Image (tube, rainbow, N blue to C red; front, side, top):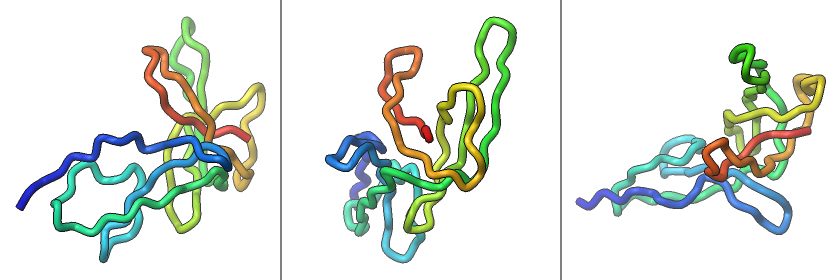
Length: 118
C-alpha cells in the first residue's frame, strides 16, 4: 500500500470566481480542507465549493493595540460542507445568513490564501 500526499492548494480561481476545494472519499461525507494523505487505492473526488456560500457564524478578533481587529467566519457551502477562514469587511460585519464570496487574500508573509467577503 502506498500513501500519497496532496500537494495542490485547497483553493483556485475559476471562470466563475474563486472556489475552495473539498474532498469526498467514498463512504465518508465531503470535507474541507481536503485530506492531506491518502492511500493510492482510495477513491477521492474533488468538489468545488463556491464561489459563494452562506455565513453561518463569525467572530471579530482584537489582537491588541498595535494590530487591527480582523474577522473569522464559518461559511456553509453546497453540498453541506462548512469552511472556516478570514472574514473581510469594512466597518460592519455581514449578518448571519448573508451570501459571501470566496476571494483571494495574501497573508503577511506573502503566502496566497483565501478569505470570505460580502
